[in-house]
Every structure is written in structure tokens, then in C-alpha cells.
Image 1 (cartoon, rainbow, N blue to C red):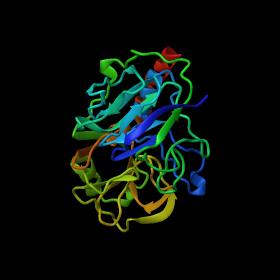
Image 2 (tube, rainbow, N blue to C red):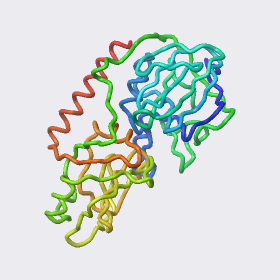
Image 3 (cartoon, rainbow, N blue to C red):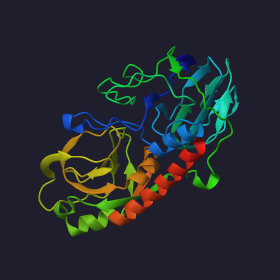
Amino acid sequence: MSRKLFQVIKPGLLTTFQDLGRTGYQEYGLVVAGAMDDFSLQISNLLVGNRRDEAGLEVTMMGPTLKVLEDAVIAITGGNLSPRLNGKPAPMWKSFAVKEGQLIEFGQPMEGIRSYISVAGGFDLPAVMGSNSTFLKAKIGGLNGRALEKEDILYGNEDVHAVTGRSLHYDEIPKYQKEVTARVVLGPHQDAFTDEAIKTFLSSNYEITPQSDRMGFRLKGPELTHKTSADIISEAIPLGGIQVPANGQPIILMADRQTTGGYTRIATVISADISLLAQAAPGAVVRFEEVSVEEAQEVYQGRESLLRVLDKVSK
């Protein structure tokens, strides 16, 4: 049964509903979308007793102000955007109760730039091709395919398994830095670059530019030189693929990336490090560290094991 949960008093800079993405449609040209920081979204869901893939609110830089219309249990994870409940600091990485009439607000970004809000029982949203993720350019998913707006009413499902006080151990909470080391697997087009370009890529600092968004992070730094051309026959693009167009400046492709691309890719960021990158603001410094496919799989399995343990505990 649906219930009115929140009224949007202020929408924030960019607040959208996101889940783990719209999979199975890239061959038709539809992007995956989904949470930029999927780890934080999954944790917020588990803390309130939801499935890992439930949709939550992705809050970017400047958070919304939400009026609570009915008692609920929520969790806020990801970047620390100074959340407050009725003017007092609200906990992060921990489930807690909110009461009718209270205000959920955000202040100054302290660490990271994206927060995630999950509510016990999940938000009541219509699925579009199996997902509640908002893809703004196509105007689909989430709340009418758009970001939150003032006076919106957000609906939720019954919270039959709501538990407060459930938290993530301090040692497991990610630390978001202004300098990020992203582990990468080289390829698939490293042969298109000079040997010097590969060395430069793995030894230089790159800055995230203000032109970055949910589609991709445009970087500025030492130029990466191609042997001949930056162009290839268009092919499928994975999350974290690093394109290098003719200007030699890398672009890390993120959640709203296009489905295919015609530029060489020097490397791919391992999936476990995408969440850390997603919390980096324009001006942050990115370095790249080469790892093997086997090392990338080991890191992924470690993160997945943690999520599965928490999933069992939350049931």
C-alpha cells in the first residue's frame, strides 16, 4: 500500500531517483544510468532492510529539504553533505527514524559530493524497462523522468521490516579524498598509444574539470599521444572505460555513458573504484594505477562478499 512520505520544500542542485541501472537494453541504444556510487546506494538500502537494488534518492552537492509527511525509517550514506534532522546533525551510515512534521535538510559538502537516501520499504515508483533509475536526457524513470522539483510528493511502500540503529562498521565506511587513485586494467586499445603515452598515463596527475557530469568525467593533464589516430569503429562502452579523443585528454565514462563510442580506450577503471571516483568533485586529482584482471576480480569479490554478509544480516 502506497503512502505519502515526503514533500519537497527545496529540490537541491540535482536530486534524482536511482537504482542499480537499466540493464539489458544497451544493444537498443538505451543507457544503463543508475547510481553513480552504487556501493553507497546498496549500503543505504541494506541498513533499512531493503533489497540492495531498491531505488533511492541520489543527492548531488547541494541537498534538498524534505518535509516528513509520515513516520519512516531512513538511512543516508555516501558523501557527507552535512545532513540535518530538524536542525540537528543527522547520522550517516546508520538507519534512524524520522517523524511526521520533521525536516530533512543538507548543508555544506564536507567529504564527497553525492549522498544517498533510502527509506524502509522503498519508494513507490513506476518501473520503466525494469528500473526506477532516472535518465534525464531521455526523460524516463524516477519521478516523471526528471529531477525533484519544489512541492513534489514522494510516495513509499509499507515498511514491514524497518529497523533503526543498524549501522556500517567504521572500518568499512569509504574515505573520500580530494586526490583519488583509480585502479585500471589497461586496454583494449593500448596498442593505439605510444609507449611514452602509457607511461605518462600511469605516472601523471589528472584534474577533473567542471565539464564533468553523470555521463563522463573529463580530465585535464599531460597529453596522451596516439601512434596514428584516435578514431576506431564504434563499439560497446563499459562503465569506467577511459576514452582518449584526438586532443589527448582522457574521459572516464560513468553511469549515463553512451552505449557505443568511436574513440580509443586506453584503460578501464575497475568496478570497485567507480564509487570512489563518483564522489570526486571538479578540481579533484586522479591518478591511475595498473592492476591485472585477476586483481580486479579479487577486489570485486571482496566488496561483493561484504554486501552479501550485510544482506543476510539485514533480513
